[in-house]
Image (cartoon, rainbow, N blue to C red; front, side, top):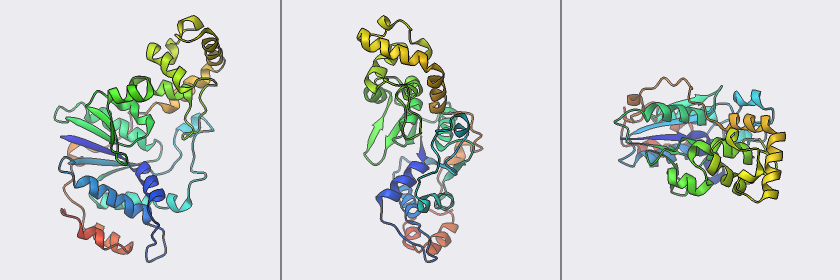
Length: 289
């Protein structure tokens, strides 16, 4: 069997900015929520999709905000989108899917914890992480754990990660720490661009293993000297940024593998959709609990 783990936060953002708005009879904006439900219904229409869970950032802030003040927050996010997170979680649950609303941790951490747990089960042939988020590339393992960009129909296995980033999945947190991640709010280390970082980490894997002798980096001496100097001056920041980019696998998820099996939508989905002014969605559901 395959397990499909969905980044609900990414999906909700994608639908919000890619689909037309829609108001419920009570005036609430609900377009992103309805678009997400339709997207998940399309996913469930594939016979190979049997076990599914969806993780959300119930609140945007997490424990990482205490580690680094510049880490991403909900500031600047469209209030019409933020207001739909609880509703989206409720709708996805009514669709009959396991839902992980994260508060202390992030949605990506839930996906990491689930991947770590369920990949140990022999009956699980493959785990498909439904998200293009580069943070999640660190979870890829051969062809058994892959990332799937549903919008662009791109599947990233381990060879794909190496081709895209120039480093193996285990080095992705180090790569992001040095290059920086504007989406998450940390700048990386000055002068460490993607190309140079890939060259160095493809040889040394992790930040601690990068030599302080510029002649050993495999780059031009001038360039290597600048990189080594900047890394040494900002070494603690580099380790902090790596901690920010490293996904946690200790998220307490109560669901067992059997809980991820989709056996149909709950009848409460009909009432919920009626309240949102969208009666056509239940008509397309082929399986009910």
